[in-house]
Length: 443
Image (cartoon, rainbow, N blue to C red; front, side, top):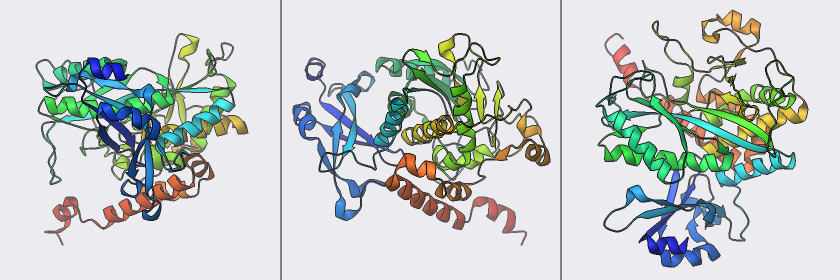
């Protein structure tokens, strides 16, 4: 790695980590300081980072993970190329920080490993490209008027996707598909499956790269779950699978749906605990505008707002896709949005699935109908409970969850709830343009 820095004239190496909310943090070091950084880490003030530490216990250490070293050739310039590494956050006594989202996921993966499982994930990441990003709350303008799978010839989006995919491939992040999504300006890029920790690192890198490439095209990329009232929101449908060595633990050739008992119990765990972990997979006030959108007569609603599963059913919370090869057996969770903290989101979904396996949860019958087309009475009769309808409800449900508290750990669990309660209170008290437009003249 040090030889690469010298050969490629890399002047700065960025050391990355994330806070509890999934915001990327960075400190740059000169190559000459890296050997010391590997030995001692980089000290920083944890009390200045969301959810890391209180003022009187603020000293923390960012310890570079050399396995994540990657050169960013597309950011090269007169000062040479740049590179990055992810860090594990440690306490002064060199033990892992309980507040580090990467450590939360590592802990969940260790629990799966004790049962003989390796956890793989494959995200489909949606986002919007905008002509600008107004800071006054006004409605932004998408870069094109395209729709699902449209070939937007001569549009910014087409060139952008090509450049973004090339940039990702050049830093070792494999892309499976990219295409225009349903809404104007909306894009989707799917990453190839990998173990969950690598995927979470890749998602954080993906967001950075996408925003940088967008800026180079004179536009702005946003992972906000629901920027437009009358258009679909951006999700991050995520495919999950467990492997035992080289064998896919979700596959059973003798089952009519090719699903093993492990897979059925895992899905049941995702369903039983779905309401409890929704505050983590959908952590923003805006997330619930995507899950419960405005009904539009000319558009099918595929947002997964009700707790059910189905085979090929895109209105279900958990979908079992069709697959050919046994190693492709997987389940897809459709509620998680593109602005989630991937480390915490993967940890709670894995924790829910493992709970289902440990307790032998029974999988209920699958949903074959369009769940949104059913009446409330029909959904209730079928046992399809709604996800929390807003952040306040999601917080209340999460606060009572022993599972989420165990997976996240006491510190992250308590901080996350405090932060989200504050966000909700601020939102609840804000007088919106909608209210002024509707009531100012009428009342």
